[in-house]
Image 1 (tube, rainbow, N blue to C red):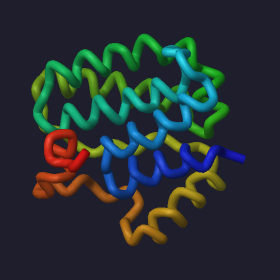
Image 2: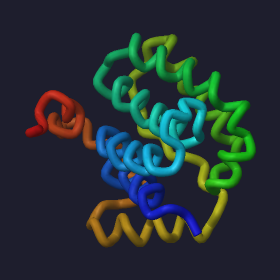
Image 3: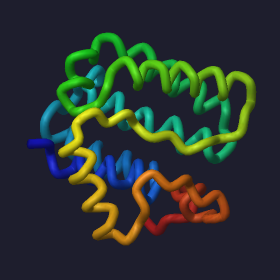
Image 4: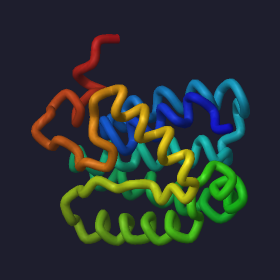
Length: 155
């Protein structure tokens, strides 16, 4: 029912907390289904992950820029967000809350997307178990590779 790459994105988002990989996986899907549509729900989800990547690294300026872009894309994507199994109202609240935390300079905290479709959540949890990662566990802030992956990965 949902695209495989989207399930992978959600497993990285909620399991490995590898937001860099979230970007890579969902960008691949976005380029196949809606290339050049910068207002796509897929771009919104990618930007949420990238925002969290910057926030976790302590790049508050970058995180604030991205959270503002996410909030701009939110309303036009109301139906698309609901159609990919996420609660629009809960997501909106979470993003507003995250924006406030970033503006106040609070430390990063892992966030879960408000998945409303139980079958989708189950699929994501199954993939997390397959990868041997716990669904919904917080980011490992001691894992430098995870936090600074864009600098440390081999291209």
